[in-house]
Length: 284
Image 1 (cartoon, rainbow, N blue to C red):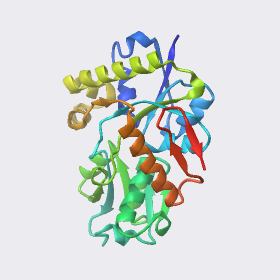
Image 2 (image 1 turned 90 degrees about the horizontal axis):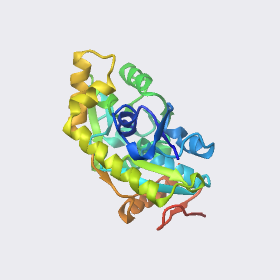
Image 3 (image 1 turned 45 degrees about the vertical axis):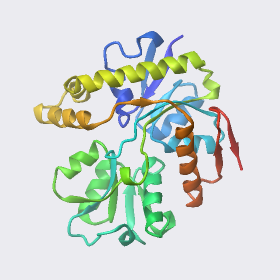
């Protein structure tokens, strides 16, 4: 059996796996590239991929839409992988200052949950801001021009923006949410427990290899880039925790908390009970 592993540019684990010599060698992988993590559920439903990796929010949305989601593994929490950026000198000094203002983000990603929790801590909710679903480059330009009050940025765009000196951090995601990458499939893809265990084990091995050789990872992530770009990627890779955790009860609890928060803020049409056992979800 060939395992069709989907990957997109924002999931560095699987992007690197698609280039790393010998990655997932016992699974006969076929790496399928696509552009958006939010498309993972559609790719699974169509049988175009067997498994993919995203932030924490897409599998919750998939479960709400009726997919029987099975979690295969998770990255370690990544406290520095996302932040709310504002333009220096623009007068936005705290989360409460975002009330009734436009905010740029990739909506439907973990950034929506990050925004919801941040607003909640300030006594607000998602309805108190205007969410604009925009790609990173456009978000950066609109924040610079003042057309949006904040930009929820993720790596590597976050590090690049902070290096320019025009922005400051209003909040880091690590103080608000766990922010993991999750690796998941659907019950309909019929992956065996043995296949999922092998995937988790080999993903963990890849993480160890990346940690041991960040320069190799940087070269793979910037094949056409110059020395400056490779140095930047080396720093990003070196600062990231590449540990892989199991899809255990703690992970499911984190997902339940996120699902409850998003439903409370009106970002989900229905509530969903994250199963104690992978692959089962009950809608209400």
